[in-house]
Image 1 (cartoon, rainbow, N blue to C red):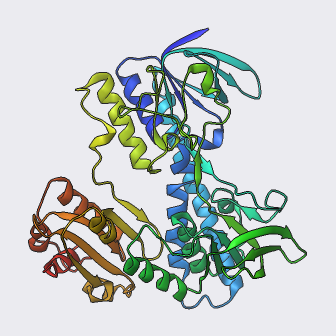
Image 2: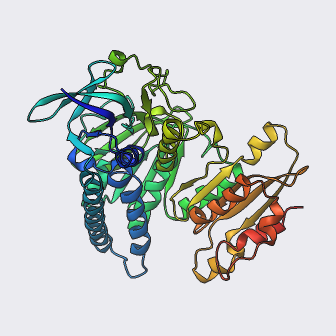
Length: 458
C-alpha cells in the first residue's frame, strides 16, 4: 500500500492550493479527483469562471442590431464555444501545475474511506487503496434537486452545470428559484435573448437584502423582460411535443401551466459527502449534511480536515482558499488563524448590473441594536455610469452613528464586484466612513462614487 503524508480528496481551489503548498514543503502528497473534467474544481469548470464568462459574453451580445432570435441564438453558440475553450485551457493548466511537482501524485477516481487513514480509489480500470497520515476533504457541493413530480424524467430540465453545455439558446426558459444563482442565470439568459419566467416559493424577493436594494434589482431584471412569480409551489414537470410544461400553484391556491423549451433548477446546493463513507473514519456531519469542523477546519477525527463548500456556510471559492490558509497556519504557522477571524466577507451576484454587499444590511443593523446613519444614491448620479450608459442601480451605506464605523454597504451598480473590496478593506482596518468620503479616487471611475455615497451620511 502506497503511503503519503497527505491525501487530498478534491481538486478544488483549497485542495489544489494546499497540495502545492505541502509538496513545496517536502511532503508526499496524493490528490484525488473523481472526474477528468473537474481538474481545478467547481470554480474553473462549472462555477465561477464559465458562468462569469457567459455573463460577460451575454452583455456584449445585447446589441441593438440583434433583433431576430436566430441572430441571438448564433451569438449564444459562439459564447458557449468560447467558454468551453477557456475552461479547457484552464483545466489543463491546473492539472499541469500539480502534475509537474515531483511530490504530488494525481489519482482520478471515486474516493471512499476504508478507515481513518485509508482511502479506496475506484476508477474505470482498477481499485487502489492508499494510506495518508493526514487527510483533507475538499469535495465541494452540488445542486439540490427538489422533489417535484416528473423532474427526473424530463429531458428538458437542467442544473446550473448542465445548462452551460446546451448549445441551443432556449427561446423560453423557466427558472426554479429566485436565489442568487437563479437570478444570475436569469439575467444572463435574458441578455442573450431568452424569454424568462422565474418561480420561487418565497413571497418576498431576496429576503436577506434590504427592501430598497431588492426592489431596485427586481425592477431592473423586470425591465429585461424577466417575469417573477413569487409565493408559488411547483407541482409537476412533464415533457410535451413543444418542450416542457411546468404546473404550479400560486399564492391564491390557483393552478397554472407554463410552457417552455427548458427548465433550470436553481434551488440551492448541498455538500458533497454522499459516498465518502465518512462513518468509517469517524467523521461526523451536521443535520444539513455538511462535514462538522472546528474553527481550524479539523473534523471530529483530528487528523482529517475539511474545507470549502463541503463544510457548509458561505459557498465561495475565496472562502475555500482562506480555509486552506487556516489549515496551513495550523500545520506550520502561528496556529492562531481561525474561521472566526472572518468578520467582513464580501459577496457579489453577477446580475447585470451586479449586486455586491459586505457587512450588515439596514434591517440587520437595527435588529442588533445599532443606532445608524444611512445613505442611498442612485447609480444614475455617477458620471462614469452615465458615460457607459449603465445607469441602473442603487448604492447604500450603513454607518454606526456613535463611532462612525462602516457597518455595511450594498452596491447594486456596474463594477460593484470591484468596488465592494475597497469598502471591505476600510471595514477590516477599522476606518471611519470619512476615510472613503475624503479619499482621492481617479476620475471618471465607478469607485469615486464612494466619495459621494459617504458624503451623504448625515
